[in-house]
Amino acid sequence: MIFNIQKCSIHDGDGLRTLVFFKGCPLRCPWCSNPESQSYGPEIIESPSKCIGCGLCRDRCPQRAIAGTGKIDRTKCPENCTVCTDICYAEAKRIAGKEYTIDELFDEIKKDFIFYEMKGGGVTFSGGEPLTHGKYLKEIAQKCKKNRINVVVESCGYSPFAEFEGALSYIDAMFMDIKIIDSALHKKITGAGNELILDNIKKISEFGIPITIRTPVIPGYTDSVENITGIAEFITTLPAVREYELLVYHNLGESKYASLGKKYELAGVEPPSDEQMRQLVKKANSILQPHGKQCFYMKDNNKEVITC
Ligand code: SF4
Ligand code: SF4
Image 1 (tube, rainbow, N blue to C red):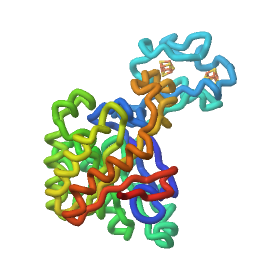
Image 2 (spheres, rainbow, N blue to C red; image 1 turned 180 degrees about the horizontal axis):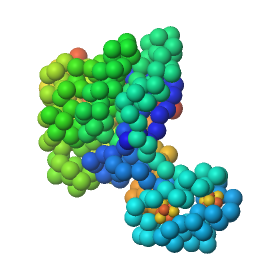
Image 3 (cartoon, rainbow, N blue to C red; image 1 turned 135 degrees about the vertical axis):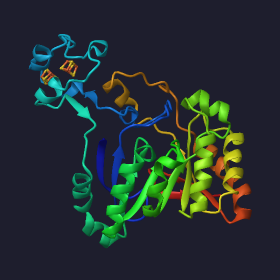
Image 4 (cartoon, rainbow, N blue to C red; image 1 turned 180 degrees about the vertical axis):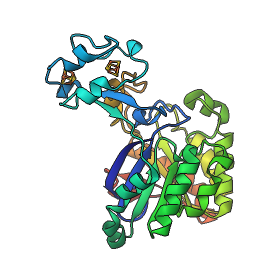
């Protein structure tokens, strides 16, 4: 199940890329900017600003789950029957999550083949967590490679190794998150410890796939010097990792939580300052650079690479 296909991305691998977002993730990071990616099933997204007030959804809802305001009472809508999303002409209610066969997804990816050839790009599988869809990932990655399309995977790393091992031969590079180095804290914040993640990163590194490690810098959650230096120390043990990227927190996904009937836990949290980001990069580089590795972050909407 895929919840988005985004064209012409320049930040998630080399060249111009098509981003394919798998639906479903085993972690529950409270800062997630794609909350519609977390559930493995389809979900209804409500955009009240698009509603033209026709009332059709309310009248046709078999569960009587839609009030006069047009808002869904999600306690009365456990199955997502999609009557309202099918009927809503204004797309004020729509479904996130669509099943694609391998051929259907490949047809979408190959539409941009000319851009991949011109700009040295390819496809990036993201999520959600693509490694938890291992068999499907292997098939689509294999088909892309057979057709000379570069394949990158973005991952939180939380999936049994045997689930995705078969896909590794068809992956050119990976971006993998380490959010919190202390496993107990990782479990408290994301819902799962990090042992499986660190073990998978080691195994993928030994397999020889180039990996960029990423940490989202979230004030009060991941932004301590101890956390960043602990992750940097782990990175020194990984032969296939050259780069460590710190991602500046943003709240662009906040409005999506309300659209899904969910609460955004980080309301009011401000992004880290430029000075704090520079200090963290400097600390990480004091550990990484002697090992020939580099930490950096992207400033001003990813226009400027900052390393120290
Ligand atoms: S069908 Fe769509 S436009 Fe009509 S009332 Fe429902 S949400 Fe609004
Ligand atoms: S998905 Fe079905 S049950 Fe849920 S609000 Fe829409 S029409 Fe009603």
